[in-house]
Length: 237
Image (cartoon, rainbow, N blue to C red; front, side, top):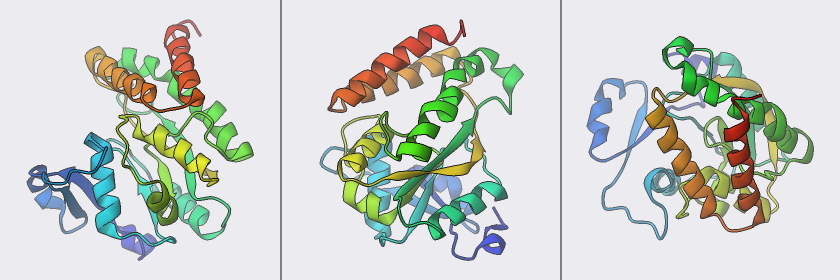
């Protein structure tokens, strides 16, 4: 993180959290801007992660040519990933967001083997439908994943994050599609860890299914069915 300015002085690192948890990040304030979502902030619909993202969007006053790389707290990226994102933002003007591949089995595999195996379907999705959607047809037919998601200020301000769905990434992609904003493929990878326990794995999936079911339209219904089939078929395949 200390070498971000050496890579490109235009890059800034932000940590988005809720009040009063911003106090937990004082040790990194010299290398990152800690943004705390006020407890008093109440958007029209957004809750949880979407609420925090909506606060960031509003408080940052994003310009159309600003770019935001969304990462989860456990996401690991390297210089190649950042350079691929910079290249994407600078050298094309057809797309308002980009997606790349996330790998889940490169760290801590033997510590949580069962849940990592359960995430095989997510990696397969990245190499298959997400790659197809953003490298060939450039529309998110089955939504997006909210980590390793590069968005322009233009699409953020047009779509916003003010949704009642807890699958805010899927909702965001489908809303961008409705506005004829297209996405592209970022040729790099990020690394994440699967949930540590089966209970956490189940809670994560439950949140996704519940959130997807609250997204209006046929696409979300088809995606829910596909995820259910994958949950059954992944251990076999």
